[in-house]
Image 1 (cartoon, helix red, strand yellow):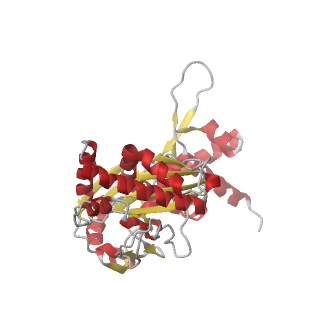
Image 2 (cartoon, rainbow, N blue to C red; image 1 turned 135 degrees about the vertical axis):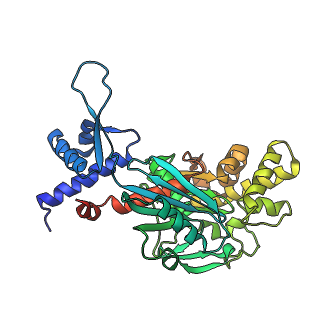
Image 3 (cartoon, helix red, strand yellow; image 1 turned 180 degrees about the vertical axis):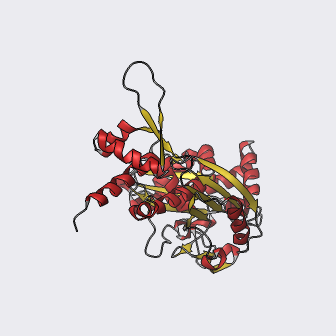
Amino acid sequence: MSMTSADLRVHNQVRLLRAVHDAEAPLTRAGAARLLGIGRNTAAALVGELERAHLVHEVPAETAGRGRPTTLLLPHPSGPLVFALDVREDSWTLARAELGGAREVLESGGHDRTPGVFAEIGAAVERHRTGRLAAVGMAIAGPIRDGRLLHIAHLGWDEVDLDDHLGRDWPRTVVDNDARLAGLAEARRGVLHGAGCALHFHIDFDIGGTLLLDGDAQRGAHRIAGEFGHMPLTGSGLECMCGARGCWSLDVGSNALVRHLGGKPGYGTGRELAQQILRRAEDGDAEAGAAIDANAAALGRGLGALANALDPEAISLSGLGIDLLRLRRDAIEAACAEGLMAFRRNTPPQIIAGTVGEQAPLTGAAEAGWDTILTETWLRERL
């Protein structure tokens, strides 16, 4: 089917909105025209249409001398917003995000680790909801089948139907795994920007990850791809709460640190105890140092195995992974190299710390929310 002039206009409007959203710094109108390969007159017409629709706002740029004045393309002050939610095993955070990625945390709280948390979150969304809200992106610390069925074994959640808990009054919502969204954040706003094939791992109580191809996190047939933490990569014989035996996640993360020191792993106190272990290791405590060593070695072995299978150009880490890299980079890289096939050892994948920070899942949730609305279908509805 051929594209009509109206179709082409909407197509270019979406391209322009995406360019404004993805830009590391505010675009000028001339810069947007060059980026999209369109004429200045076409760019001016598109910007005018999007400004009238309250999607972008054109403001004069500061001038540095003589020459034609230029303008910057910014989010419209009354334009759409996306809410981002990060639901941890023991807490939640709600933020709002503008076109372009600017984000503000609105509210956060703890919870009792039951699905009742979604009633609390729903009330928070309603407290901050305005007519500008266009979509919600939600990060969940566990597998989500088909975008709505939650399987979080360590919380006792088995096929918790998110539709039943959110109700019908929620705005357009996309839900995804926290590690996958952390990887998406690094691909869009962080250290993996521009990478063609990369892996990202978010380490908290345990480890989860995602494969990223050209900036997009891969999801699989039922949207539950990337459960790397539940692969037997390190030879462990422990039984995991997921039902499998020998999962990598039993050896990497806060719970593994606690377990190594003889403590009882838990999803309410594990993070705090892990931070204590990290501080003890930095102070020279041998027992805590041995726990860090074991975590780093298991992390490296798993990364080597996955590098053999997936051939990434880079591997980034967030959460506790950043601390492990800071304290035991050499050990992680050595363990990874030992697990690599011989021909890969001369050019191993770079292992790097994520740059988005602790809010990587929240940032990724915002990006996922914007992905649902920066489309031609949504724009036709808006215009």
